[in-house]
Length: 312
Image (cartoon, rainbow, N blue to C red; front, side):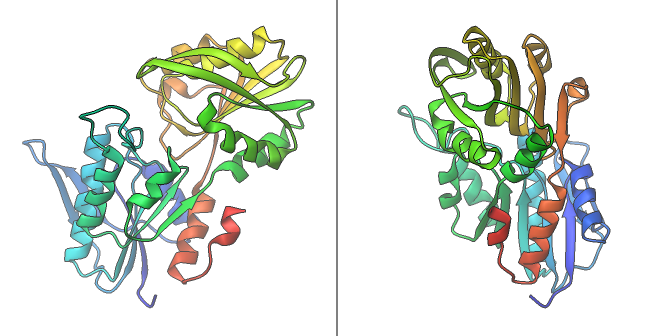
């Protein structure tokens, strides 16, 4: 790629975009991203992007619809301004919960969003820990799918915990938990649950020995916090000594912190793919920055280098 490297951002996570730009020893591209008086999103680029290799940092977090529209309009503006290549950097990919039809008359939202991003003009995607790995296949353009596990595992290892067991809070997360426990050299336990409603969980069985152990619940995201509440209760009932929680995306819906305060979690570890709400900024929530990893990935993509070492 011969064009200049530029990084732009919408409004969903400006601190992360600025940190990524800082790691790249550059400033964010200048753009106006605001609203018209009628509520429509307004985008205007203030830097020349003709022939440039442009990266747009925009996690589609709450309010998801608004931030998704910002991303689409920024991509469209870059394409119309003759950018040579546009990469959508989406640390958190919203609309990922409906990646398949579970009943009749449902949309496949994750596929629709992939189509929208491609239609807007993105040439490739850079993301992290998709809620369902199959979403990568929804794109007909290259997707670089980063993992936060190495960063989170390095932090956990720095705590020098003893007798550790990594816990998957559901059957679907077993592969994720198993990969994490391999990184830190720990045991594995699995909590099986059923979900009677969309945002409700009911634990009904657990496999693995946790009595007297330091347990770490590993998930891809924390939304309402109810999964962590029920999982931590189950672990303590089974004799776990202490319970930690670890997740890539701290979605933290409105009442999530109140729910987490009901748990006996020693610490909840998340990354900054999503801005942390002020209600969650306390000593029990530890935030690990993903900016260095994204900056390295952006530079490697710009220079047409391999990203394989970043997935190790």
